[in-house]
Amino acid sequence: MTEPPVERHTQVAIIGAGPAGLFLAHLLHGLGVHSVVLEARDRGYVEARIRAGVLEQGTVDLLHQLGAGDRLAGESLREHSFELRLDGERHLVDVLGLAGVPMTVYGQQEIVKDLIALRVDRQHEPLLFDAPVTAIDGATTDRPSVVYRHGGRSHTLHADAVVAADGFHGVGRQAVPTTALREYRREFPYAWLGVMAEVAPSTEHVIYSRHADGLGMLSPRSPTLSRLYLQVAPGATRAQWPDARIWAELRRRLATDDGWTLREGPIVEFSVAPLRAFVAEPMRHGRLFLAGDAAHIVPPTGAKGLNLAVADVAALATALIRLIRDGEPELAGAYSEHCLERVWRATHLSWWMTSMLHVVPGQDPFESELQLTQLRHLVTSRTAAATLAETYTGYAPLLFDPSTRLGATALWGASSAA
Ligand code: APR
Ligand code: PHB
Image 1 (cartoon, rainbow, N blue to C red):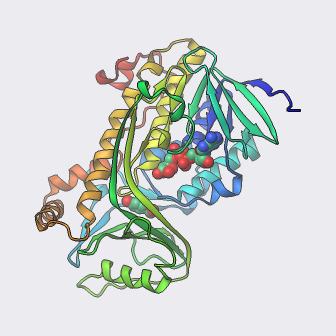
Image 2 (cartoon, protein in one colour):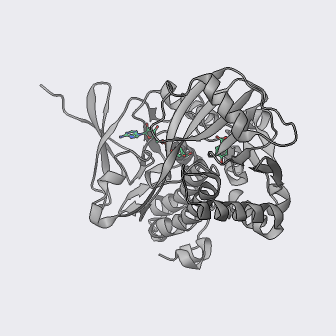
Image 3 (cartoon, rainbow, N blue to C red):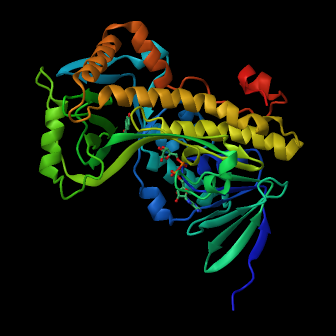
């Protein structure tokens, strides 16, 4: 005999304990709004997932505002520039000088650990692991709900709003009728092989190298950890890429004409990830809101994914407090349009950097010359470099303003009117 579902209520049901779900839960907590975070996987799995680690200043500021910035303050690295390598020549792009703000390097999984620890150990607010959501009901009513499994039982959580922060493969987007959603996709014909190596970085800043055989990348993670990437064929496997081959290829693709050397060390993590861009529009269906990778994916070149997820939930927290506390739906109505402006800007940057820096085997020489002329333009024209640096560092401030009584047009700009 199956037991009846357990029923309970919260103000905001959040699906997913990735960066989007966790940042949102903390923003809402700070505003006195209750939420329950439901995560399909276990804590160890979520905390170990390695992704890009370059943070915009707005993301860093928000972490501090949430009281989760102590470890970041001690362990992160400040980056004032990044390097473009072209035919063995090294060119520094002075991001701080061009855009007025630096970037910060701190692993995404470290942020996830810090936010989980704050929620579970200090706030004692509900965050359930091993709790996969299986259905979302009543999205277009005032009282949506989610059904999830936990502890061998089925549970129903009623809420004032449901936020799908459940990543690209989650259930949230699938709960929106296909007729109510428009999807934009671009698959790139290559993948990124990523490794984490226990070795002091051979650089102080991120290096993007365009090589005739494809991109090579190096990103410092800490005084003792280096993250490295190679453009590879989709579906590449560990068996095809033993350590010696990875290092040999990295040495070749990152080689310079001035004697720079790549430090090597034990590889402690290996992954291959496809490169794709994806945008779903609108990011809201009634009282179901999509945030982060559930709504949009950018290729990793430029490291915009996490920063976009944070920008979404900063705006969403502002919209939800107005909806739930004041019964005022205007900002919730403008959420999608507001976020998509930044999403498309970042999608363009990521697509642009990806297209310039990757080489498709056997590609048209005309295409290669176009890539090279763009890269040379970037390293010789301050105006061109400034355009890149402006979006690389974050494009526009995050909009988190829960105290506001302003409407969407005044708060988020004319194009965001509901
Ligand atoms: N029920 C509960 N949780 C779910 C479900 C489900 N049905 N489906 C997925 N999840 C969980 C996943 O296990 C994952 O922990 O949702 C979480 C989504 O987290 P992320 O994939 O990290 O997505 P997001 O929080 O939007 O993070 C954006 O992560 O992928 C990178 O590049 C991206 O840096 C960006 C950031
Ligand atoms: C990373 O450190 O993982 C990283 C850095 C810069 C990028 C992408 C990824 O553009």
